Length: 165
Image 1: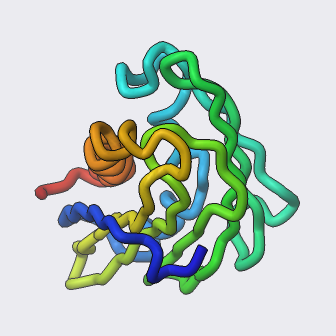
Image 2 (image 1 turned 45 degrees about the horizontal axis):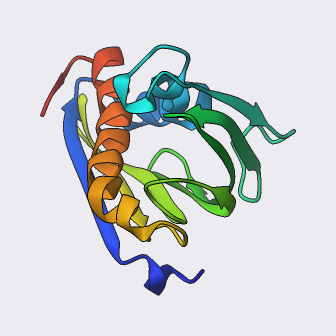
């Protein structure tokens, strides 16, 4: 799926009391990014959870694979993502290469950090398509889920580095 086929976009930002290098290092660890999908962590997972499996690159190099599997609301979910950009301490992005999702389809997501003195501006974004099957689920819940996802990532960084939004 080409990037032009991602017809939907969500993003959130926060000012963090940390250098971009520290923010990037925290978010470069996909365990930090995926914590919101762990067991019992959120009603948005509908009682399910996801497990994270990183390849030898640990999700920290271009071409590295990040795999997640589990369930949400009784649906089986499997995602294989690949890191497409990694420019420490400024930006990182990844996209799905194989995904079995429910309320969103294929996606590209990432974050950008910019520094100003002892603070950073963090922006987390997602570009996504509606799911190929059951598009009505995407129309009903895709935006809500995408917003939740980017907010959870922003909030993880905010909790780690006292923030103002």
